[in-house]
Image 1 (spheres, helix red, strand yellow):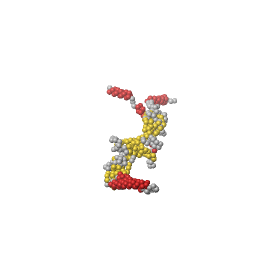
Image 2 (spheres, rainbow, N blue to C red; image 1 turned 180 degrees about the horizontal axis):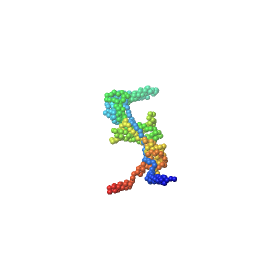
Image 3 (cartoon, rainbow, N blue to C red; image 1 turned 90 degrees about the horizontal axis):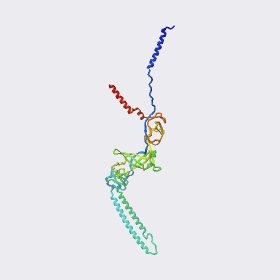
Length: 411
């Protein structure tokens, strides 16, 4: 039979365990409630601005004269006179004397030709008189008819031919005498001079090279697919008469000039596979315009060109990387993701020109989304930042509480 001690000891141990368990339970803190996390994706947006747009086609080229001429000697002789402006870089007017070949022999040849013509005309007058005398004499004879030879018509034709030959000799001598003067064929810039004073030149010798200053040309290569963006003026021509903005440098400063497309060469270059448009600018050196403040466009200058294309009534530019399968992502008025199909007119560098599909004020999503689903809820970066910032009332209350705490601690 169990003793009293054996019964009390287990009861004490059990009571002690229960008390310890209750004590430990009372010391245990309840789990903290976690704040609910908002997993709405945050995006950045840009507002779309739709406005009229004019397309441009970029190109480049070298400025050259529309007309240039190699001056060639047409007679033999010594250079006896040179104009002071007949030097490289000199500007000359149309018909201005540049050089003179010794005219002495050609003046003598002209006098000789004129003398021959005078002699031939005298012989013609004499033969015409003799022919009239012969005709009167034959009229007095009634029983016979005169022949051509009797009336001296062959002799008259021969003298007439001699007069014409003499006239041709005079014209030739005059022309050779005129060719002793080397004159500018148009308003020009002297590109080079190949003779000096006292030089002897023969027929075909190079005298110099002149560049016409009335009109300058720039050949502009354009990719075939870019011609579609230029205004069509004919069935096969694009961009003719289109304005062109030329951009280059003068004295180290960036400068612009206005030109226009005068024609298309109409073929594709076999090496570059480019089509060529020709731009023209009148009076590139500002010699006749009276413009004293403008900047001349020098021959040989390298320029970039912006050719004006056709106009689009409503269009906008957006980054190319935002377009996926012809669609872009927008944030609608309910802060939800919405994909729209856009009409891309052309690619322009890192952007694309969109003509249809976007409206003014649309919010274009410019940040990346991990798992985008059309219609999903989104949040703006700006809105999220505003939530974190305290309001002005909260700031004032916090400032008041801090000042009160300082007063209490001071007391």
